[in-house]
Amino acid sequence: MRCLSSSLVLALAAAALPLLMRETTAADHRQQTNHPLQTMNVRMQAHRGVSTEFPENTLVAFRAAVDQGYDIIELDPKCTADGVFVILHDTTTARTGRPRTAGQPLPSNEIRKLTLDQARQLEYGSWMAPQFRGEPIPTLADVLDFAGQCAIRLKFDNCWQAFTGTQRQAFLDQLAEAGLGERMGITVNSLSHLQTAAARLPQAEIHWDGANDDTTLKQVVELSRGHRLTIWICFDNAMTAWFKGAEKASEALCRRVRQYGGIGLWILSREDERQRAVQLFHADAIETTGSLKPLARN
Image (cartoon, rainbow, N blue to C red; front, side, top):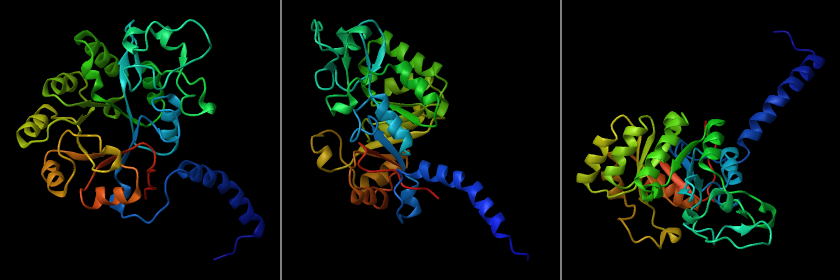
């Protein structure tokens, strides 16, 4: 075989460098570790976006989830007084909203009593750090447009179930019209809402976080037929100590639930927790606020 000339080698190296740089940039935020393949293939869900580093439920937190390689963004829909769907975890703006300018106080801090224009008189970033001052409240339309431009999946929290019947229908209609297909995800904890959501969103992933007894889960499987189904279980750690609801994850529970669908575990923050979730509980998806980063996949 003939040797390449030094000038040709340099030319080939120069041509390849931009491609290598792009590949490295895309993987910058993925942890480069020697984890088992099973661990690397677990889907990572960003709770309210990358909320450890950016203001929760804002577009900057959602963009960070995409940039850092997360598979799913979990987010919380609310409805304003004039019927516009926005993304906000709490029922009030008290914790995360701050006035943009000094002036007349708003008539309420309950998001359901504020119009969109009134909610936009607040900004939702400076509560976390000064550099995020001015971050607006995202509308559902903003988020759906954002998701349509990238490959990220969305998982809407079950708080949509608290909407009025008219609001629920309008919310599901707006999700359906976005055309995200299987990248749309909807969380439910009641069989009636599952039936409604599955019918209106025939390609969406169903995220079940309700009762996990065998009788209920058999009905969940039947109503979710044709959908990807993930069943969420609380992981027992310091972050979930407040949760006094259903049974927390154990090997026996996860083994039983796995026969009905994929296993999702919430909320994890440490690497040893991830290893336990995968090796003992065989998790398919893990939710984190951003402390755990996605792993590089082969």
